[in-house]
Image (tube, rainbow over all chains, first blue to last red):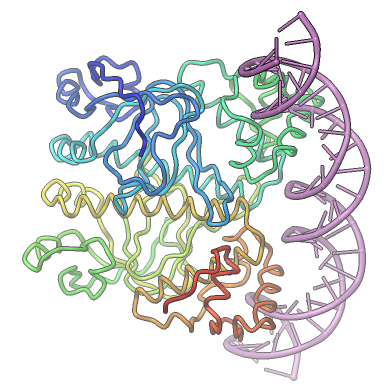
Length: 245
Length: 245
DNA sequence: CGCGAGCTTGATGCCGATCAATGCATGTGG
DNA sequence: CCACATGCATTGATCGGCATCAAGCTCGCG
């Protein structure tokens, strides 16, 4: 159902530069090699293609190696809700475990590459390596906590707060990957942002414009400069926390 | 920080009538006894008290044995978002794994009792019993999928759709526990429902009234009769699915 | 009995959806 | 190279759903 390019390379966690963000956090060099069996192969997903779709049988999980994804669920009447954006080092497919078939679509927003992680392998290695078991649980737990934060956002925040919180979250994650916290390129359209935040694309656009005239942002298409991070924090509802960076 | 009554009883999964809903799904009788070490103790939580609070250090998870809970997150400015309601057989505390401290509050909506499940124990037994490992992963995965459904609801549905979907979800879960799908007693206030659904309590109340005048529900305080389940499905956004039950 | 918590119902107003027009890239085929 | 289509973004005008404010009700309880 998804016959997509399958580029096989000598996949290995032990020499991957994402290992501090991904599943093998906290592994020492010797153990790391034992982990290499975890990643069966890699897979390329061209921009716009789905890595998996709702209903696909669950066979593996995927760690983003390069590129950018969105996940989305659909309602019966065709409405789309984006449930998250995933970048390098983040795991996709956790939704598939509970009933052996995926519950959402994962779509590449740019040409991407993922590591294919067999769930069966992960189960086995988890029994052998408590550290891996623990880390996997942490990742699932973090996803739950993240979802609760989004529920808070969708349930009660107004448009400007949502957009500010969204941008802050993006910059934090980019920063953890070594990028500047003040300059970013959006990988998604205004509509996709809106569908994530429970807003229309026009509202997202207006927020960007407002933030720009207020001197908080510099917006040029998808290129964003954060001019006043403290203000962004304030807008997102945080109690005037002084940015220490 | 939460010195609450600690009623110790001979806790055991093997003779628990919730074992088909809870962690030990699919265990045969002999293995079940090995699982009894999982539940260290039970704990009673009076109505209105917190089982744990955001920031509490994470030491264990909890399976609801009797009673009813809500979980909630707070924003810095004091707004509350209810992230879920939990009934018998459901697990609380999964949010605590990711950074060893809880990220939400769990509050009893009526006098309740929970089984205390040591996370350390669960890790160990998971290595020994692949079935348990699998079931635990399924539960976390299901929580993620559930959260995505709520995001869909909060992101795009209007008030009546939200309330209808909420009621349907409740009746389904009650039915899985052997209760009637057409008669239920709400354990929570209108305000708590609203805070879950991203609505004000007045709006929730108006929806109930509307459903009643439309002949879909019979509402008397917290006592709800579902008169037309098919209509409720339609209202929740499903494409006129004929209820086969 | 009186008080307060929770619920219902009505009147008004605001935020963001909706509708609509324009601009601006990029791509495509004549 | 131009004419045209297409996708994405911006901006304005109007509208509607739900929040907000307000009043009164019911019920349980000290």
